[in-house]
Image (cartoon, rainbow, N blue to C red; front, side, top):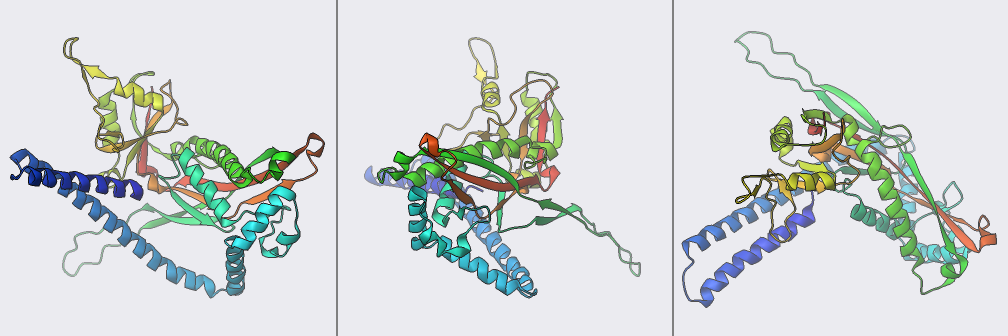
Length: 400
């Protein structure tokens, strides 16, 4: 859920309501009937946003509460406290100003002496874990280039598999006669596992540029790794097959409807896709499609030449997202364009698409590999996996 958007939306609504009252006060008059209706509508929208934010806060509180006993149970395992102490120590090191300064010096000069003092931050592949500020910068930039991450549930793990229990079938109650046996109906619980597929890249920088204090080497590397990792992982998040890469939501999403044409979509078919998703999922659902598909739908019109009307009238209010049937439309160019046999539109609640990523990223400085070219190489990798945890939560439209 995009909480920043909701907060900005609420501020805009509040400003509009305030302006209505201020205008009437300046004119020394009461609100007109139309103004009263508009003001009431604005307050209703503000109330809905407040309720949504409160619900999200309540859910977060429950999730935190539920996590505590699980954490306590893990801490009771032999050796767990020692592992936790090492993890906490490494986290403290990575967020410290001293480590970040030493890391910046190492990036420019290759001097390991200061970093060697932080042995807990040494990576097994010969590099060093990036400081928290650098890694968080990468994540933020990835969200700028990657439209699926903000929709999904993203979980960071220090190591190992992330096992997620899922309900594959729900039990049911039954009316029971007096004195009759209780109805026996059990939930069926399954499990999916998120591993860590590795994406990697080497970025080369000239020795002169690396040594130039006016050049922000840290920001440059963060941007280069972020953009390339974002492009690569987004492609997998859409239709990855899980073979040496994450598994995409289109791979496991359920069929919502089939278009009658190979190169066209009708609004009737979009309506069928909308209603193929259960109402419980539709409350937080979004449309995801290629930008060319959005353009195609936006051009569908009816009427005669003297009275042409476009069937899709998106919101024109400043700051509002594009919506269709009341749900946001997300442009994702990793989605297939309209063509024979492709899944061209996805609709559903993408919070059921889970992304598991390793919480640390190494950076390796390659001093000798490109020395004869006067270049320094920097290698890094991102380890990530993904899967749609409830296939009925997201459905697709497929072309004939």
